Every structure is written in C-alpha cells, then in structure tokens.
Amino acid sequence: MVKKNSIKLSKKQLEFNKILDEMSLSHHDKTNIKYLIGYFNNEKDKELASRSYLFQGEPGVGKSFLADKIVSLIKKEILYLGFSKPDIQGLKYFEDMEQLLLAIDNNKEQIIYLDDLNYIFNKENFGEISSEDKRSFLKILNTVKNQANKIFITTLNDLNELDERMIDRVEVKIQFDIPNADSKKTFLTQKFKKYLSPKKIEVLATNSIGYNYRDLPELIKLAYRFDNKLSANTLKEAVKTYKPTQLMGFEVLTPNIDLSSVIGNKNAINAIKRIKMSFKNKSLSKALNLNRNNLLLFHGTEGTGKSYMAQALAGELEYPLINVRGGDLMTNNPFSNIDRIVGLSKRYKQCVIFIDEIDKLIGSTGFQDNFLIGELQRQIEGAGKEKVEAIFILAMNNPSRFGSSFRSRFREIEFKTPEYEDRLQFCELKKQVVKKEMKLEVDEKVAATHTKGMSFRELENYWNELAFRHLEGERIDEQMLRKIGQELSNKTIVEGMFG
Image 1 (spheres, helix red, strand yellow):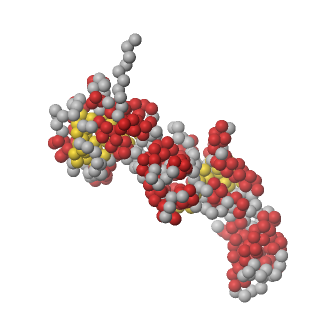
Image 2 (cartoon, helix red, strand yellow; image 1 turned 180 degrees about the vertical axis):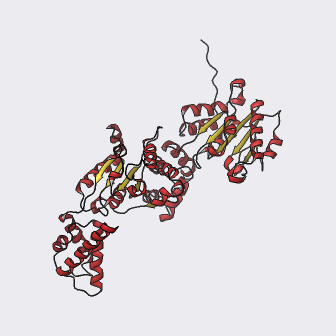
Image 3 (cartoon, rainbow, N blue to C red; image 1 turned 90 degrees about the vertical axis):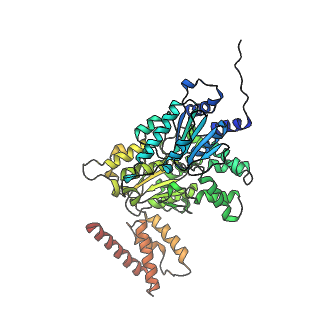
C-alpha cells in the first residue's frame, strides 16, 4: 500500500486555514484559494493551474484581509498597487500600472497584487475606465497567462465597473459575502481578546448580523464611549444605536415603547405577540418550519395605530426600526431603491423595516398593471438562496390597490377604529398624565362617548385641542367636550369629501 506524502503545515498556514474555513465562502472557493497557495511549491501541475484571481464584494467583507494573508503566505516578491500599504515582507509598492508593468521580471516568481480596482482605475467622461488603464490591466493579465511564474490577485467592490472583456480574462472570480458569526468570532478574538471575554465575543458576533469587519471595531468603540468600559450593557446599547454605512440616508429609530403601551386592536396585538414569540425563539421556529411570519401587511384607515404597532414590536424585540420614507423609495430610480431596501431586509436579520402608506406610493390605480409592485414582489420572493430575514412591514390604508398574488405573500393584520373601551382607556391614560396641570370637571367616560368614530390620531388631536382650550382659560366641561368632538367630526367629513 502506497502512502501519500504528508506535508507539515506551518503555524501560519494552520492559522490561515482556520480563518479560511470560518469565512462565508463556498467550499469550492476555499478549495481554489488553498490550491493557489500551494502553486509555487511544485505541488500542482502548472499546466492545469489557474493563476489569476478576482475577489469581489462590498467594502468591509474581508477581501483585502484575505488577499494580504495569501500573498504573505506564498512568500514571493509582491508587486503591489492599491490604496493602503500593507506591512508584508517582499512587497514593492507602485504608484500606477505603468510603473508596475516595468517591474515585471520574466525570470522571477512574482505575485501581482492590485488591491481595490475601483480606487486604482482612472475614470474618463461618464465614469468609464480610461483606455490607458484598460490596456494596462489586460496587458498584466496577458503577461500572467503566458508566464507560469506569475500569480495575479485583485480586489474590487463593484464588478459592474469592469467590461466583459476585462472580467473574462480573470480565471477565478470569488464573491465575498457578509461575514457569518464564526468569521466574526475569529476576527474579534484576534483584534479584541484583550478587551472582550469569550462570552462577550460570542454575544457580539451573534447579535451583529449584517455587520461587516469595518463595522465591528466602530461598534466596540461606540460601546466604550457610553461608559468608558466594555460591559454587556454598553455593548447591547451600541448594537441598538450603531448605524452601519449601508443604512446611511435612512431614518433608523430605536423605539423605547413595547406592546404593553398599545391600546385597542386586540386581534392585531395577539398576531404580533406570535411574531415576537417566533423571533425570540428562532431555533424552535426553524424546527417547526415557520415561514413568512416576518412578512407583514398592516392595513386600516388612517390613524388606527399601524405605525405605532411597528415601533412597539421593534421596541419589544429591542430591534432598530428602519423607517423607509417616500423619498427613499421613489427618488431617482425606484427599481434600484426597491432592490436596495429588500437587500437590507435580507442582510440585517435583527431589525424591523417599515414602509408606511405604500398604497399611495406604488399601489395600482384602476386595472392598470404596476411594474413597481411586480418588482417588489420579485425581490421579496427572490430566485436565489437569500430570503428576507428582517421583519418586513408594509402599511397601507387601502389593500385593494394590491392584487391577491402580492398580498398572499404577506400575513395581513387589520387595524380598526378604536371601540368605546379603547377610547375610554386612551382618555384615562391622558387624564392620569395631565392631572397636575389640567382639571377635568367631567368623567372621562363622557369624553369617550363624544369621540365615537375617531381614530387614535384624531383622539390625539381632540386631546390637544382640550389642552389648548384649557391654556386659553376656557372651562373644560361636558359642553366643551361635546363641542370639540363635533368640530373635529365636521372637519373630518369635509376633508373626506374634498381631500
């Protein structure tokens, strides 16, 4: 029996293998990378080896980090062009591709490492890569293809910047995704074990889903600024309040209310409690194969508590709420905006994404098809492995503006105008809050009676009017309660008739 030759791995190689194994890459991609590292050790048949590699993915997902590790392990002369200057033995830094091309030696084993093509390339009119840079890039790749003693590694954020001919010349293209919990634990252990216990690292890694390697250090620094220490409480507060780069431009709220503060809508509350239960115990939800319980459609007339319920759910779960406004959805290219918003819901699992009055934004009118509804449905459904992981809530007044095919993908929750008991509870709470400043000369039951048919928003307006009349020295009695109720009812009728 013939035994295979075993190769003793160095400590650096073992550490690298651990990092690679825990990264969010496919098994096939990891095999390709290990193959590349062994190339110059004569372990592989060079005729069958791929020697040009492109690492693609958004900023902060570990492309440059892994590329640095690879070139330092191979231990050959490195011709480097990029934004940073990594401290790697054998690295020679160049200002542009023309200089780098002149340093290529046909007789030497060399690694050509271009870090961040989006930064390196010069742009002409309309954002096109300059013709000179295109020629230099293709010349480098052609040199690597024809010389077996060369390896090429490059990174970039946006693959769309390269034309098809440039992409086609690179043999191996590897997509980097958001780091998983294991990758983050390894990263945090390497960088912050002096400050964080293994338990805190575990908590931070599992509660920062969607964050990249650049977010994590900033998250920790934010936690430290809260109380000049890294405690469980400051880390928890940092996770709630930190705003990753991808969320810039969106309104991100950290609600301090919960379901106990919600009045009325008992059926809606019961439905939301089930959703809370499933998110609090995700392992059980997975075992029970619960699907689509995170896709919610709130509908009901204006002011019936849809927005408040979304905030209460976020507060109950201690999740941030991403409030998507009309401009976020409809400005510039709505199709790209839908793609971005749904992309956030697939990336950030521990958050609530809320789009209010979506029927006014993209709802169909008449029998005419609406392409934006189709795009939103397509993005939510998704053809790939990624699903919407966040709690994704659409709120609308008129659900009939969306077809049954679209609505069937959501769990519909109806919000109704408050009943007498709900209005009474509202008035009791308000009276309790203001009793030191405003004396009501009638029972709150009278106020509940005279506000019949009002929404919660109209109840707020009713109460505000009472407060102003009190400040103006008017007497708040039953006659006044009836008068204000009638005035607001008449106003609502007129607005309903004439918009």
